[in-house]
Each structure stands twice: as structure tokens, then as C-alpha cells.
Image (cartoon, rainbow, N blue to C red):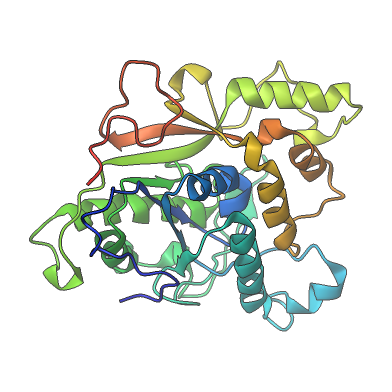
Length: 315
């Protein structure tokens, strides 16, 4: 069984069933920047929360000069360091059950490159054990036992584009979707545990209305650089979803402080002198997180679009 910080207790059947949430993210810090408020709120609400991180982020850019020696092009010690940051961030969010897919360092960060138009693409060179190059079934087989053990009612991951196109995000999406499918098949690898059908899978996204409002607020505050200087009324990047396609909104504004503290814990990756992070951490708007439904139990038609588990028969 993969490494764990908190094994799910299946023996308390007599007690009320707690909602169970699993999140599949590519690197340390992705969980906080995209879903940190949702995680903190879920913990505060008494949900069981499991974070699966697919790599240690070994190829990440080091934003702290005194840590520059950890870069993959120098001492290559960034992965273990980012793991310590992950520990600190999870303490801020209150999450005790967090694992690395297959164990620490099983799959290496793939890095990324950009094309002539500024779009994120896979790097030309990457190690053989990088996540992007891993056989999908090999990676999914590391997620199947986690799904069958934790039995999440909801899984959150990225969309098919990985949010902004990072190859590891795209692979995390594929692994989450395929792993959930395999975990539900009773005849597939019974040695990995009893089958579990995940009732609902969600993809994290940015709602168009929230993004435009956030850019307007930044401009009104004199910040002309936030989000690349984009026009709040102009075209937006593919990570943004029209409001009418958003299925559930988690208002985590009461947990903004926890999200910001967790972001600060990822110090090698988050530069709070940067206009993007200044805007994000100073406005509760960015603790309101949005998701679209990929598959599973439909949300009720009663407008209850603030509950990740609405309509699911918790068992």
C-alpha cells in the first residue's frame, strides 16, 4: 500500500458518514494555489481530505536566491526541499492525509518549455522517469489502490488541458480519470483492493466573471501587471471557463488566511513581491474556487451549487 499519513478507518460504520474528498495535483504548491481554500474549508467542515501529489516538482524554477543551488541544473535538491514546503503547507490547511503518487520521487517533474506564441509545451529533453513520459497504466496503477482505500465521494483534478498546459498537469488529469475508471472495475486488479466507483469527478478552473472582476480590481488599485496586463474585457487564457459552465462554487473566503499561509510555505515557488501573488493574497475573491463536473452524479436542479457532494448518496 502506498505511503500514507492517515489511513482511512473503515470500522466506524455505525457513525455518520463523513464526506470524502481526494485531490490529484501535479507538483507541491499546485494544491494550494488552485484548491487551497476548498481543502481548508473541507477540513473545517469535517470532511476527510486526501491529497495525491504526482511529483516533487524537481524541475521548478527557484525564486529564492539563497536556494538557487537546489535547482536541477546545480545540486538537484529542489524536490526534497519542496517536500518540506508541502509538509508546512498541509499543516496550514489542516490536511493530514497527503501522499506522493507511488511514493516520494517515483515520478519526476517533467519540466516545461514555451513555444513562439508563449504557450506551454513539453520540454525537449526530460529524464526517462519523468511523469509526462510515464506509461499511463503504470501511473494509474499507483492511484487505483489509493482510490479503493480512501473511497472518495469526489475527486478533483485538472481539465484535459491541465489548466495552463503544463505536461505534468495534463498527465495528472489523465491519471486521475483513468485511475478512477480502473478503480471501479471489480475484475481489474483485485489485488489492489475492493472496487470503488467514485460518485463525482470535478475539474478545477477559473470562472470568467471572477477573473474579469479580479483584473478590474487590480487595475483599480493601480496594478497594471496582474495577469500579464490582460484587458479585463478582452480575451482570456484557456484556463478560464464561462460562468454558465461552472457547476459548483466553493466560497472559501473564510479560509483566505489559511490559503495565504500555505502559499507562503511554498516559498521557493511563490514570490510575494510579484504582482500576481500580491493581488491573489490580498483579496478574498481568490479564495472562491470554481469547478466543472467531468462525470458522475449530476448536481441537483435546486440551485445547490455550493456543495461538492450535493446529490451524492454518502456511504
